[in-house]
Amino acid sequence: MKIKACIFDLDGVIVDTAKYHYLAWNRLAKDLGFEFLPEHNERLKGVSRVRSLEILLEVGGLTFSDAEKEQMATLKNEWYLEFIHKMTPDEILPGVLTFLSELRNAGIKIALGSASKNAPLILQQVKITQFFDAVIDGNKVSKAKPDPEVFLNAAKELGVDPSLCVVFEDAEAGVEAALNGNMRCIGVGSPEVLNRANLVIPGFENFSLVSLDAVC
Image 1 (cartoon, rainbow, N blue to C red):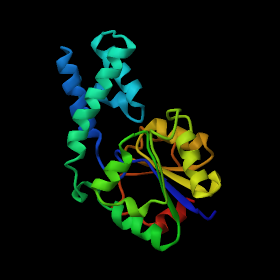
Image 2 (image 1 turned 90 degrees about the vertical axis):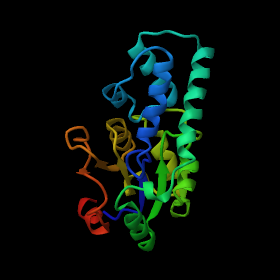
Image 3 (image 1 turned 180 degrees about the vertical axis):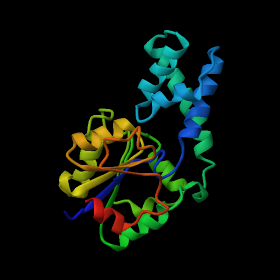
Image 4 (image 1 turned 120 degrees about the horizontal axis):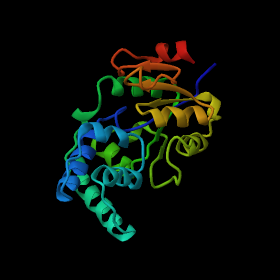
């Protein structure tokens, strides 16, 4: 099968902004009087900002009104943006630039499919916006992964049938979303967590178009 498009998640696939999310969420938790541990943070992978806040408050055993939660989510995002505005191209994960260049040279379309509402800013900060033919972020979707909306919207904007797309994801919910959208999926990370993906790789350092063709 000839793949015509690659769709990438952002956090944990192209850059590691998860650490900044964690620092911001942990700061909020401390302000609320409890500790938000790294193992708690694992539950936030691939979910929306609203759901992430709900999980954090569940961990702390706290309940707030919708208006209060909206204020907290906004505050957390302001702290997160402080980190994002300091990002540089050095934060692109190893091998990603080489692979994006290879895809571009081969005429394969490239899209971003991320729940992050800050995705365009991050791409701009690390100077790779030019590689993407479409960017579908949290501002353009209403359903969170594992719903395939974000990836289906990306395929639609690219003008490519979903069956001819491959998704790169680091979260279990993202893998499910790709499969639910009738797309192939390459997991980036742990084979134990991403075992439903068609292939799991540790990163892009030794991954190429040849590797992609072998899977698809």
